[in-house]
Image: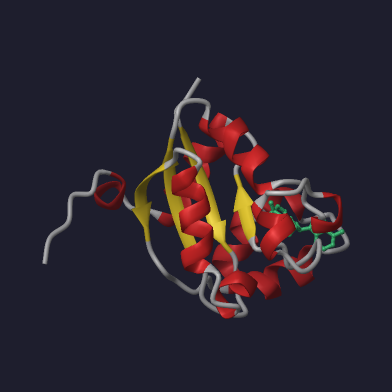
Length: 143
Ligand code: CMP
């Protein structure tokens, strides 16, 4: 089992100024932030990231939303990271999310649901590599 997961603080949460509170919830739940940036996804990047959903009726809306403003991708470390992070964020639909979860507090709808979390160890590694270069993953920066 991997101890890494991947998260995105989505454009709705960035726009609503929830980045600080969400990162605090993540670190207070025991996750360590291993890599982080603020970026705005291109259409190509968002289409690729959500390729598994390309047959879904909401795919176009999802891609447009993810490109609508800056987002904050994060590489997170914790024992049992993938499952524990999904517990912390709560159900996709904030109306179904448990009290105390990030989506219950900060998400407005199923489509604009504040955060993404990887659904498996395998996808976590693929998604981390989608956003972070090898140097960024290793915190190996140069000026
Ligand atoms: P996320 O964890 O990023 O993974 C896929 C995303 O698709 C999901 O969060 C939601 O934001 C979005 N999504 C899922 N179901 C719907 C839906 N019925 N309508 C719009 N967006 C959806």
